[in-house]
Length: 78
Image 1: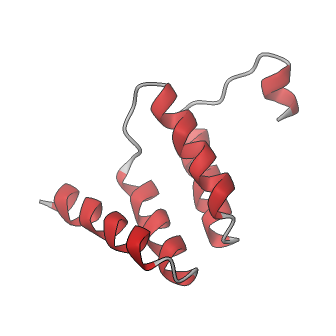
Image 2: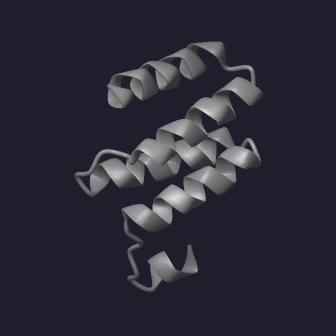
Image 3: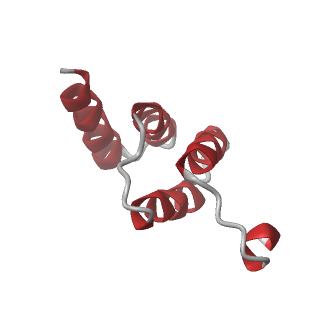
């Protein structure tokens, strides 16, 4: 956050790693904030981010969002 205050803006790759870490710690709100930052950069989250999201939501028993994330994974897989 301090880097962002100093004008540094991480890229999609950095945000993707952070989403994965936050997902493993089940910090859902924080992970979703980073997803918004990826969207602000005009890019879709990479496939690995959707895997992390599906795992995070499943572990946190957020069924509706887990199903949505799984649907995105299935669509991207094809």
